[in-house]
Image (cartoon, rainbow, N blue to C red; front, top):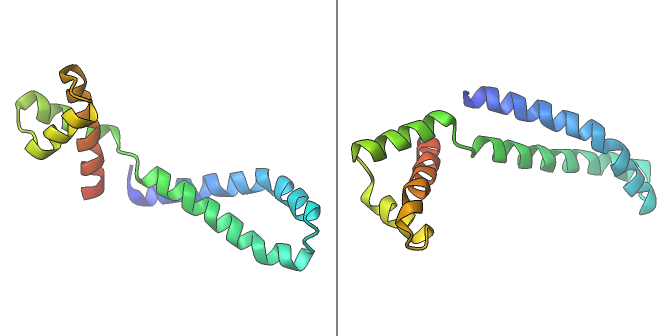
Length: 114
């Protein structure tokens, strides 16, 4: 999935969540005796923060192709030695978990590079 598609989907998700949460936020504003003018000023900040949270979480998730490429690298023996060592540390010295940890780390690295 392209970054543009992810941004559009994140924006749609944010708008949907904003509509659902809108009633609850209005009640919170009433409870704290925030008048309508202040609420109108705060609403863009609240919705912007929500969009940023959803947007950054979606963009930072590796795609399945990155996991597949990472596994292929491990199976072919073309691994990043430093990342391989870090995977062992993250797996707390357990060799049976090292491969899975490496794949997870490498997929995140590939996501950042793309």
